[in-house]
Image (tube, rainbow, N blue to C red; front, side, top):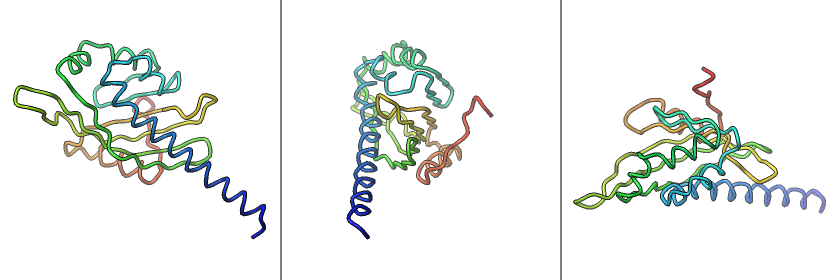
Length: 168
């Protein structure tokens, strides 16, 4: 292997690691941003036409996502004390697109301490933009025995995209 080939290989490796780090930071910023009620910053994680599909709620575009953060339901969670605790993110980068899988727990404060309100499976699709990596689609399903939740995790871990609910 020539020095030029080694340099190219090293540059490719560094770029991949930087991409994975940026995507992981994007995913892990969601919890602190949504738990602090920063609707604009949460929405800015997505592309302008990005999709957030979580069980019974389908949001398309930053305005829909920001509205969810500002909603009475979400503001009620914040007022009671909650955390969207993100687990490790498994990222698969392919040029200017990436697929990832992750888990999260929604923990809520109550009279008797904290309790897990929800465990969720996430499938993420990202695109590289001029502003860096952004979420193109996040599909989330409760881990309540629903086979779709397991499919999302498996597809994300293998770097396989899933069909958007609106297009099916």
